[in-house]
Image (cartoon, rainbow, N blue to C red; front, top):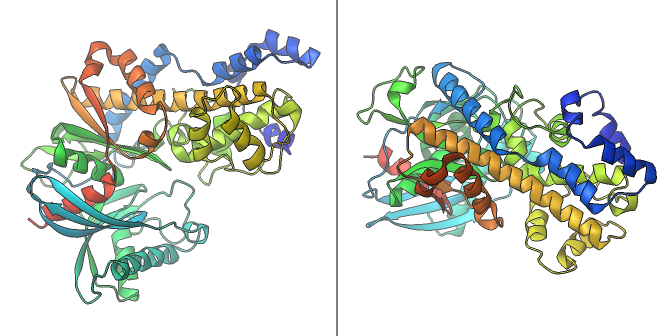
Length: 472
């Protein structure tokens, strides 16, 4: 099974990729059937490490792609105007509903205070890959369930901010056409349709008295929630199942904009940066990235997302481990049915492994032997796996830093900028520090002006704030 997985790569790996491996040492150890821990880790580092020269190349390519995306309709890097043209001033008040992967009741109170009541809903696999009507009915049912559980009358009318975390060509503050699914969603009869209309239809079918006042990308919501408390917040970053970022742009740079000219002269842009470098010009793509892409529901799309977001990091680790098992560099060549199952190396495992500071890596042993059912692991095996996890996540943090630094250059915000980030990196050890290290490599002393804050429930709160602003 392991061999079959990697046979598909033979015709796809370029000569350039194969040259990354220290071949002489590899062949020497392969002939002996013995692999030192140092040689294995050296090969892994050659696959995953991203040096300062490459970081700068990526930043330059980002800036070039930003410019094209702001000028050209339907460009690969979409750079979508959000129709949000000003930041909150802290005077926004009221009670609103917000819908994303959960339902929230947002209470905006005086002096920048926010109260949130929330219930998360897990979208079942059957709804992720079904007819679109089923997915939107599930969302509508979730809102109704939340209203009942929180004692809200179903007779009342409610205003809702709809946080939709997939690529949408926004055509108004409360309208937008879905053009691509990501994060392994793939619902039929949806692409090209207005997602607000599809959800409104679901509310009508289920006789739920809710009106959508704003369509909000989650990154825009996070940025707005950050700016509600810190006016220097100019970037909203998501690093969860998928990844995306929003930032504030001068309208004069958005050459493709055909709408009215807002008084602020500004527009929040949803970059859809998961699609950055789908052409594979500059990103340091290795054989494991290629395999992840080939086995995804959208091969060739969201290449950047598949290298840095939480949904895919565990899969990169799993495929790397399978490669090492095939070469008898890990677990003495012994696999298990569990680790051979796609997406079985969960993101929580990665976090636990990096937090395992015991001498014998006992929690890593538990994950490998009790959860992934590897028959037996040595301390050497566990150290190698831990290094794989570190390398995959260091690369994610450094590539993320490239995009952030590019945005700082794009906005000319070297004098100070706050970045509001969702919960993922607050839960993952070392991620922020690794990102800061790479930002410092790229910006030097100016990196001290970059503040990164965790913004819990930011997308939900931001959607409520935007609804309040729409109602002014």
